[in-house]
Image (cartoon, rainbow, N blue to C red; front, side, top):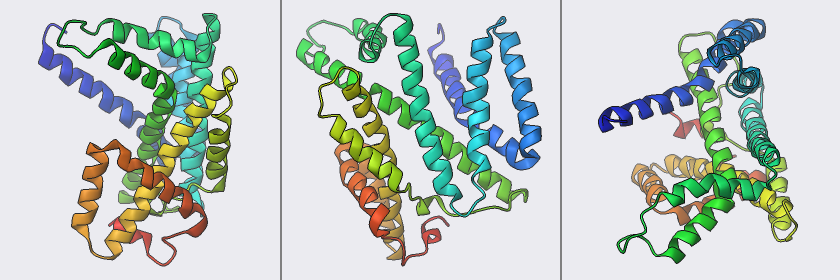
Amino acid sequence: MSVPLLAVLMSFVAILLNVLTPAMFALIFMGGGLRYSLQVALIVMIAIIFMSGGSVMLGVLIGLLYVLLPIWAASGLAGSQGLQWCATRLLFALSAIVLLGLSFVASSQGLSLHAEVDALLAPMFAAMPTDAGALPAEGLQEIRHLLSWSLPGLLAFGLWSIWWSGVIYARKFACKYGFYTGNRDSILSLNLGKPVAYMLMACLVLANFNVAGLQYIAVSLALVLAGALAVQGVSVAHVWLKAREMPMAIAMMYVLLFIWSMMVIPFIVLGLLDIWYDYRRNVNPTLGGK
């Protein structure tokens, strides 16, 4: 940290390694099969336990999250609905892991899930400047309240994006070198299916009931499910625009999504409707993936 540029570089390297780790173990499964990948998983768990000074819990957690979960996701990728299977299973699994993990930490400290997230955010806001040039106290409190309600959902969505992208990247790499022969649907053909849509609707209903704990979990799940449906909506729009040879419109769509967060709402609705109406049924999805 005494060399700011080096600190930034090492942080970037750490993030990159974190992103590529699920892809690596998915690739190991595609190249070596289940038996070999499970042997690698066992070696990794033992190595983590040894390097952490005998922390069995850490070894198991790393093994489950970074090793076994990508292997499990990749194992269903080769089927006829492999892309949907992989995306939805990872979505539900990572959402459950985030909520259960935070709940376990909260219960060990005698706090509710919401109170635990508030406690995690407290050091960040305590370190913010309070001079005249800083944000007013009301603004900081509003930001803190928003982050408090959205953090679990955003964390789960971020992990899902990394894990699913990693598995898809591993498939692309395996296809390039000829050791993957299963389903090769473009990511632009993603359809999360009705279970995701029904769960989102149920979460939106439950989010209106002021029941201790239940409302917070419902909001968190609704955020991650809505984010995944937004990805499906973007895929629909990309395919539709690509089929009509409108590359500038595609570029503008992604630019607007990057700079204006409210643009995500129409894509959530579009992704939700696409589950029933299948707007890409008359368009080859691979048009946007080549």
